[in-house]
Image (tube, rainbow, N blue to C red; front, side, top):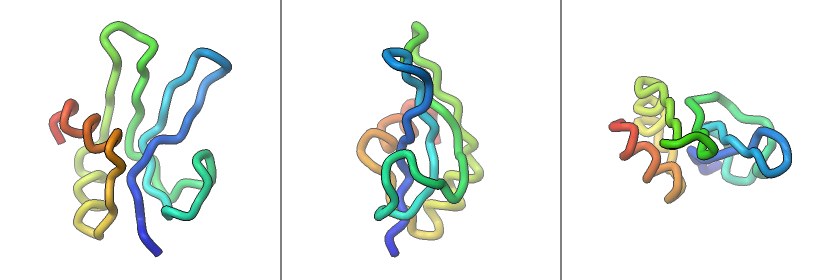
Length: 79
């Protein structure tokens, strides 16, 4: 069971925002997350990123693999 840090889409049509979550890699995109780690709102200028760094580091220590997009967002957030 591979764990991933990835985005789930929230918001309404044409107004998306995303939650950064930890979940099983086999779970569908908007499926049940194990833990919510932060959010990303691309609709404001500049884009808003908020991440709980301690939770992210804990999941990375457990072997969770971030997706490419989440990895880039974490680097922007300084985690």
